[in-house]
Amino acid sequence: MQINKLNHEDRLRLMRFVCSLAWADLEVRPKERAFVHRLVKKLHLDEHEAKMVDEWLKVPPRAEEVDPANVPHQHRKVFLDTVKAMAMADGELDEEERESIALLEQLLT
Image 1 (cartoon, rainbow, N blue to C red):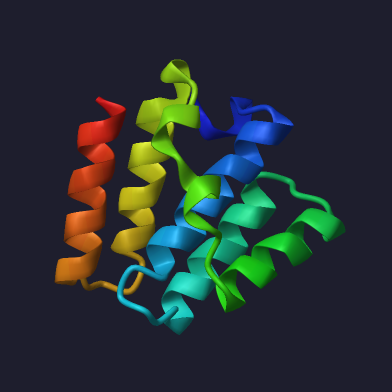
Image 2: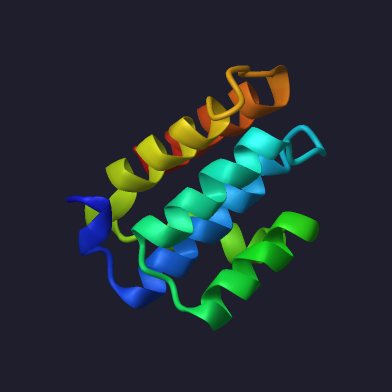
């Protein structure tokens, strides 16, 4: 499954996961923010959706909005790969990000 094959709902779900991981270390760094903005363009999100994503960069999505159980099975690899790419966007993988990815990996596989 390729990222551009996600339906509308799954694109927003993916962005919630990505933004949530950006907050793992309690700080969204400029390179992480840039990664998110590139992903918004790649997913062809509209203006309203892009504003939602910007809000998630200001305040992380609520925990119930990033429930791995809600990720469709066929999209799990795409979600995990994209979240991992987000974690490496600033060139650092800190302990909080590493733990978040490990937990997500356990829950998605």
